[in-house]
Image 1 (cartoon, rainbow, N blue to C red):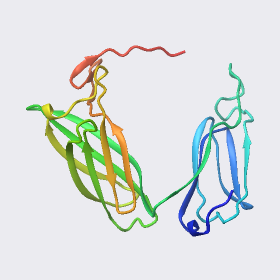
Image 2 (image 1 turned 90 degrees about the horizontal axis):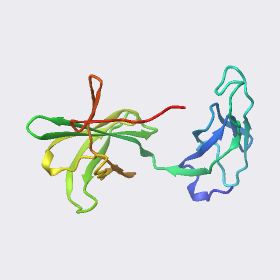
Image 3 (image 1 turned 180 degrees about the horizontal axis):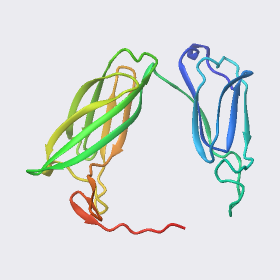
Image 4 (image 1 turned 30 degrees about the horizontal axis):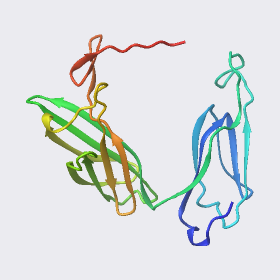
Length: 219
């Protein structure tokens, strides 16, 4: 595969959505990385290996042994190989890696919402101004909008309290989702999230303060 010359030097990654079992990845004659595990996604940073013209080799082995899952005995066909798309993509110098939303029901019909994110970047000694917002996608109303200084590699975020009547809590009957938007100077991230509190009280599971019955089976 080729990479435009003006994109050389950008942070470049390769992502395997599903590969089984162990694999070694080589790019332009050099090993980029190796990993082990059935039906797992895996990502490698290839910034220092990629060129304008590239040739990649991936060695995949699904040989079974007693020390690795699924072992030497199982009752299904143990397929192997690259089983899903492989993607090469680029990220800005500082990018949003992951997010977390936590909801707590307080007294006096108040709801505490915590929005967190972790940034990924080469410079971990510098903080990045990160803007958080929570928006109703149907009305466009902003539930909250605040900023925080985050350092790459460490979780951080904002916390705020709203009236319970001003938000729609997620439930099985009403699975309402808000738009969580996170922005830095180099990156922006948007994903749908639900606001809900799940707690264990004795032998009960409470969703937004009400008991729910969980049914299921394991084969």
